[in-house]
Image 1 (cartoon, rainbow over the protein chains, first blue to last red):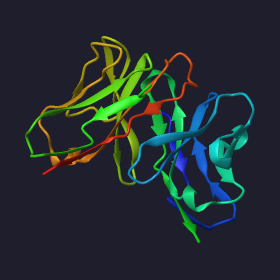
Image 2: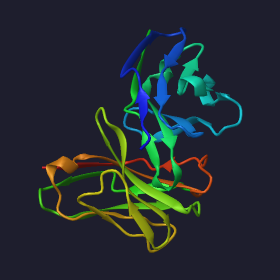
Image 3: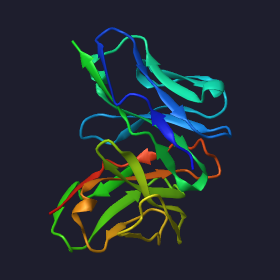
Image 4: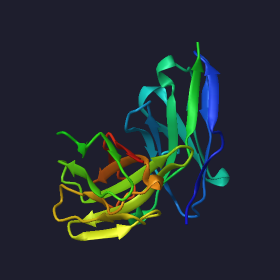
Length: 112
Length: 115
């Protein structure tokens, strides 16, 4: 069974500084990987997805992620954090018919 | 398009009561699924369906039933609610399963408390 590990449960950065949210996946085959964001008391919104095309994937709101097969990683980055980025972020792998495998989430805190 | 809709938004049940969480999508998606979200656990798959008349179990199916009589609707039934089922429930849909890149669209969630 596949598993997704988000290496930090909480990340705190100052507004205007870079954001790095780390994710490792376990699949040995070419995975489909996603990052979703959940703002407080809201549903989930897709930030970006990797589908075996370009290894650097650009998403919405200035986020991007790089797929590194040698490291089984799919880290999410943003050059400059904004207060509105404060949310829960989920790294997700899709595996065939049985849905998505979620990481446990990283809570991003933005300090003013 | 309304996308994925869920009702109710909030529900409080007593232990042993039954209820149905409703989910509907208007995007003609083949694939629909139910997840529960608990603090520190991410989202876990309860049941899923790859088309009308076809359902299967996910990671945490115990205590829940589903059926898929139409493409649009995928209700989740709690047969006899337990406090361990206190959670936020999300319904999701996507275009299909043959392309693993298909994005899943999520509903706004139902917050269920069982006392």
